[in-house]
Image 1 (cartoon, rainbow, N blue to C red):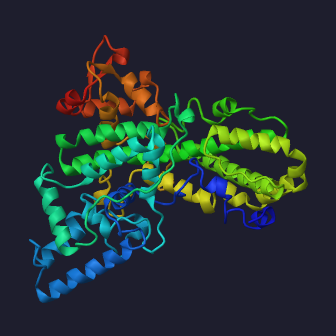
Image 2 (spheres, helix red, strand yellow):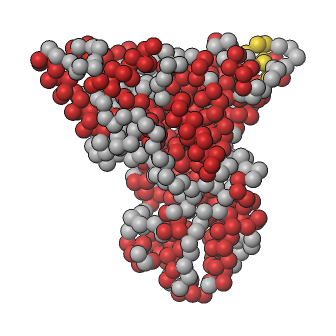
Image 3 (cartoon, rainbow, N blue to C red):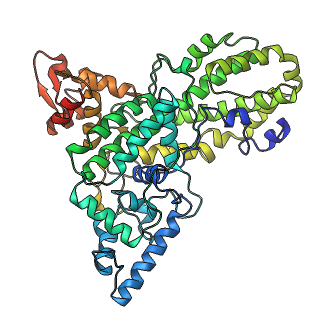
Length: 503
């Protein structure tokens, strides 16, 4: 790959230093629902062999297998249900609502309540080229952990929590055993996560970012499993995963944009002179991408557009440096970005002779639609954010209340109504539990506001008493009105026994 080839196909191949960076957006997000992410997470944690590529075909094969048993009025030896009943279980009891544009399509889509259900359901596409959404969550675990050893421990804890054992409710145990009887392979067993990137310790020190908060909250959610049914617990996990995943992607967009600002400054002879200056410049001090009650998608679109421009600029600069005889091997830390800036300044004349600025101007003009998120990567990021955060729009109006773990809701009933930031009841439960984890004594709603801010979601705690979040808290019994508390509201732990045991 050379700068001239990059000019012709700017999105096709990234420079190795960029592609292998800990801060690269890998895997690149595309369309996914909250249940797709959870299903893919099952596959990455403990279903080796059940890849995104194999899931749609496994679903079709299982449907055909059940039909053959129905025709012969038989069932597998280990099954407790006959074929007709199992068909009803898959296509009615466990069926997950389809989107309006999927209403006429025939495919198997079930709620990912137990691991074995993820072997044949929950891929982003019905074809064999779905992106691995679970790999994004795995990457967040490693980036949010202090070191690789800590990441392995939380990964093992997640596998244990996702497993169905004697502590799970009887329906979950029955369901896992029954689906195993009809679809036994692959068996549930922890998958080696392989080598994953971690954030540079110097960069991580004192830095608050969504992946770091997600790892903390993941531990809190895991500890609460024994306080509720399997369905309730997976709903809480799903709510935290979906908010954290989109926040992580938005945070990476901002880091990319700020990194490109540093490198672009170096092209003009300025930019950070050392790692400390680069660290201060590229990591947002107060990250925010959602404002409670306001429209959400325009802000996400701006960040996605800035990310795409940064990706073009960073890769073009790396290819220009290579053309000038300088090989960059890493972009995984602030120190590495500072080194690139220094190389750009030192080799300024050689870089200029490569025609870097002309290449950037030409590519930016030619790729305007992509940079505006109207197609390609930017459009995929918008689809990802909208469908992961937004409340599921079911084709069947009877099931419109199926999704309660959303973070975006429609302001009206029209298809053109904007998506605004608003938490569903399950999201509120999950966030209140996580914000109170490890605490003793009462806490005001300000603590919830601070917790949301760590994911980039901003809500003024003084407004909670009068907005729909305050209404949700009261309806769920999660607050006590107290004249001595800030805003007159004290948070109540949703699972008090579990809260006391973790404090």
